Figure 1: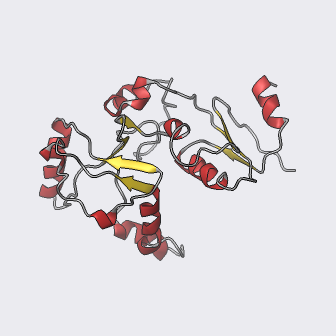
Figure 2: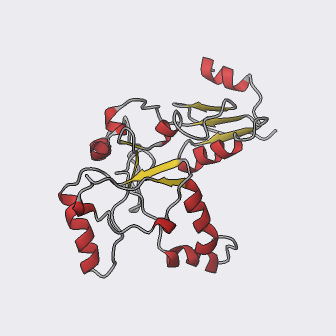
Length: 221
């Protein structure tokens, strides 16, 4: 047994969460808001702290198929992860969320989930230097949160992808509401689980995150 594993097993924890993804760390942060609760998170991935490729939104594609960042699983097309993504904030359509409730899941309708979208976000209005190509003029303030742990804003730069994405969606009849990105407004870096670990709300002394730790089996008491 490694020294880290021995250290973990030597301490009692109220909760052990396997997987430090968006769901795992969100749950850990909420649980550790209670001062008397201890939480540890076991994450198989490495901690890429201060790694330019992990922190820079425009370098996300450089991590694809690199075993240092990407597990390389082959599956059906899915959305990005907390590490491999371009930092674009996109909420699901209302009818898609409502379909969850219609399948027999009480409490999972759009009207019931939307308050939690707002609760999770702090929206920062765009400055004068925001490119017109990002369509930052069309913003419904009521559709954004203003006191949550996830900081959102418009990027101050744009490229060919940004310029063609929005008009293409409009020509297809899908419409658009601008391109918002998740990044820390003060330093313009992308948000991932490893950056939230060290910044912002929810960093509690009672929470421990152990990276590069694989979990093979969960034994009953």
